[in-house]
Image (cartoon, rainbow, N blue to C red):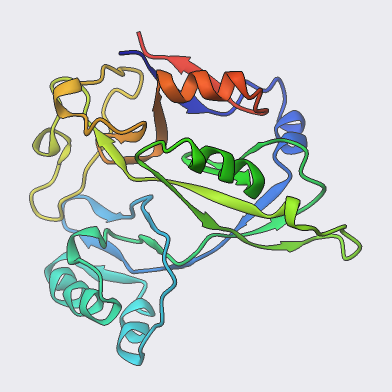
Length: 241
C-alpha cells in the first residue's frame, strides 16, 4: 500500500502562494487555553466543525480565555455538557463552529490551502469526490464573504472545507509516547520529518491524520490516482517512503 502526504505546492515565493490561495481564514470561537505549572500556557490546533448554540453558561466559561490546570477538567466538563459533545474532544483552545473566510479574488484553483491542515475546495469538486465514496473524509460549507462588493457570485464559487476523520499512527508511536505531561495532558508531534505509517494502527480510511496531528493530511494511492486522473489543480502529493 502506498501513502502520500496531501499538501500545497512548493511555491517559489509568498506572492505565488497568495495568488494561488486568495483567501483569509476568519476566527472562530475558541474555548479557553490551559495553564500548567510544568508546561505553562498552551493551546491545541484542533477544530470542531459543527454549528453550536452557546448557552449563557457556555459563554461564561469561554470568556475566561485561560483556565488553570487544576480547574480545567471541572470547567470543561460543564462546557461539554452545555455543547452536547464528548469532553475528550475539547482540547485547550479548540476552535468551535463552521469555517469562515474572506475571498479576495476569483477562485481559479480546485484546492485552496488556507492553513496547515485546512484545505478548501470548490463545491462542484467536493461533489465529485463524494461520489467516489472515499472514506475518512467529509465536507462542510465555508461561510464566506467577499472583499470586492462586485464579486460575481454563483454556485460554482461555493467553497467546502475538507474535514478529515480517518486516523493512523506512525511506527513506534502511540498516545502514551506523544504525551509529554501527565499533569495537563499536553501532546507533541516529535520528529516531524519521520513519517512511517503503521498499517496495523491505521483505520483503513482513504484520508487520515497521523498521531492526532490535525495539521497534516495523508491519503491512499486510490485518492492520489483519482486526483491525478481528474487533473485537479493547486496541490502536491509527497510519497511516503
